[in-house]
Amino acid sequence: MIPLIDLDRQFQMIKDEALKAMARVYNSGQYILGKEGLAFEEEVKQYLNSPFAIGVGNGTDALVLALDALEIGEGDEVITTPFTFFATAEAISRVGATPIFVDIETDTYNLDPEKTVKALTDKTKAIMPVHLFGYPANMDAIMKIAKDNQLYVIEDACQAFGSTYKGKKAGTIGDIGCFSFFPTKNLGTMGDGGLVVTKHAHVNERIRMLRHHGSTKKYFHKEIGYNSRLDELQAALLRISLGKIDELNQNRQTIADFYKKHLASLKGLSAPKTKANIEHIYHLYCIEVDERDRLSQGLTKAGIANGVYYPLPLHLQEVYQSLGFKSGSFPVAEEKSKRLLAIPMHPYVTKEEQAKIVETISTLMGEING
Image (cartoon, rainbow, N blue to C red):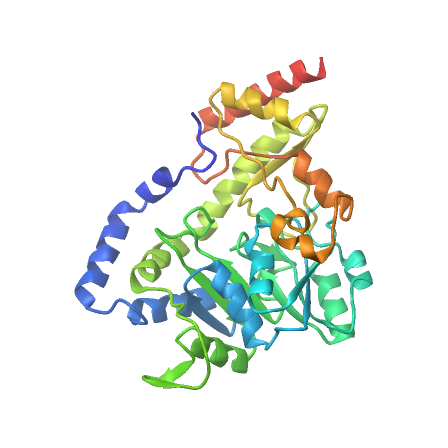
């Protein structure tokens, strides 16, 4: 089976460096909030060109901490997309606010700015765009809406580390950017990890306090906080991968170009679309297919892993039934949930594997189209 994501292959490439880093942490006697975490924060801050960067426990915590730091909670509304991983809306609900879903653009699968304007109310406090699959949302339009209406912008960049929007790194354009270092992410580690970046000094200070039980001095607590710190081992491993991230993302882009060259012209199939000055780093490579289930079954039978992202939009999830949405509320998101199919994408998909994937898809689509 050609895997969808090959973590073993990815981590084997840095095995020697990783073992040395682990030994360094082991011998340091510092495992939480030590030198590795501080070094990673400094290095990632420089890479992203962000004034402040704070390592946290995971990507979901990054979103929760961002909302909490901006004092968004009970009675507030946050506009976001229904077509993303559950953690985006979960974080909004976790702080007591209400997620207000807005449909997506048909070509980028990201939050639709025109529909966002229509969803604004006097309770709206923030917009949380998601840079889905590694492709940045329309940040010019979103930032204008936020500025015109005095709203915060929290970027969910958990799938987009290293992507750029008109020369700026995704996650650094709004008030706060949130990243996940889950093992499958473009910049991933061997466990959980997350990052918050911000341009605001007071937000940086508050998140640093909140991630550590609301404390700035040991055993003295200013407010109820969280236990959400990027541990030293994960930070040390991330420092290794951070030094290679541009190369790894370039590998993904090269593979994506190969896929597009051989698949874009197939009847009944669409390859991902990109726009000038917006860099896609292909956390996932999702094709859009008329007969998705038939193609998926054929690929699986041929030994090629594939996956559906996402099979049920958030507004139709059981937990959000109380919000009153129903089938048809967000037709674009619902349509894409029935059409998108992820095919193997990671930095080390071999040329032989790539060739087999496009050849198999071409053959299967020929059979499907009759």
